[in-house]
Length: 211
View (cartoon, rainbow, N blue to C red):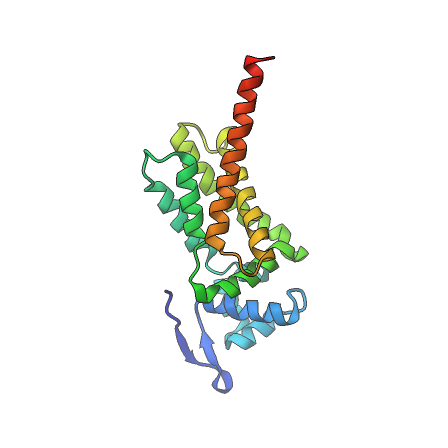
């Protein structure tokens, strides 16, 4: 777990200087006051840092809810890079995605609030598409490597978009049920998708045999 670096701040306030802590402080303010109603200056003041320091960690206010997204994304890239080559693509993707979305129990409430913001606040939706594109690219690169094609070709891009859809559907279900287990929800979502695609493929083959 990332260690928190602290130093004396104004009026005894703790001076926070890590991505995760700054993001958590921002999330709490967003939840209490609303995303659009919370200013960068208010977040910096609550964290005991200057505005310039805050922007060294997060280029924009819209980046704050994403927390440690970049290191997590790089971790998923490494996981896929070292995936067993004998493992089917769908299985490798499922395990990598589940690992990417694996959070300690004491962080799940905060993560639930984060995802509610990212999926429902209009101001964040446009920025989220940029993050989703980065995420899809990691998936596409892995699939392309397995298939021996370029990442921007249709098969890798189709699978990357499909994976994103599976994940967003899983999150919507998880957010709608307080008792739902996030990992289990992802496993069910991938299993459902695999079954649906398999059924469609079987039906298509049947049509080809019996026009």
